[in-house]
Length: 344
Image (cartoon, helix red, strand yellow):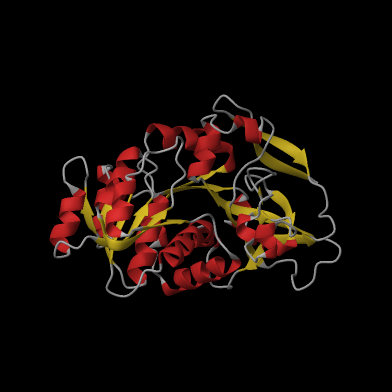
């Protein structure tokens, strides 16, 4: 059986090719992929920032949904035809992090779709332990938002956002917006700091207070909103030095700062503020199985307006133009690829 796959070939290019599909091996499940979102990491790969890790013959993609098409030997509890998503983490099980129960930050972690073949292909074999089954009434297009929403669930859980706390989200891209939605659902009073006017307008449409740091002193604004207290929880999602500067300037005494973004270069951090205000800096990386469960529950509860969050859906053959558009005009909240048209 042949499968169409989008292969990253370097130099900002994808080639949609026919590949022979192998049967799922022992402990594996084969999925016919329905939809796959384009995430920030995918854009980094497309721009050549991860060539040494990814190479020039890889099919990437991991924000997906699909239908089980075959099951390998030794797999139980799953059946052909089930609608599923994949939690794209393959851990070793023997390192200190795994032994301590932190498999999602395994010392030898393989991120499926980056370190191994990903979901921009019609048929995809993955380890069975990565599978999460979907409720029957959840559309496959909406289900492809579960992976980034699980990131946000993990971030907010790490920040321990509580009812009535003041929250600042620095960066209003897809993950920042989802963090803001999950934090608000947890009871936080959320402000989003963002420089892109289209994203600011979308955040305001969703009912968030916003600020453009190019025009407003956001730390001063947070103090004005909170009786000179500042933000109890700050999420740094911008990946920028100005965002790192703001995270310490806007934090309340004993505030919690969650580092969500992956910074391309080592940022400078104002350590004096950690001393004077007894701040906490918290790392947050990917997600655990329970974060996927939480994301599915929140989607079912409707905290994400999926139809407006999904900016556009392109067919697999248009993946090159989809990436080109995202890099030249980064106003989309979530661009998605329809991988297998018959499942749409």
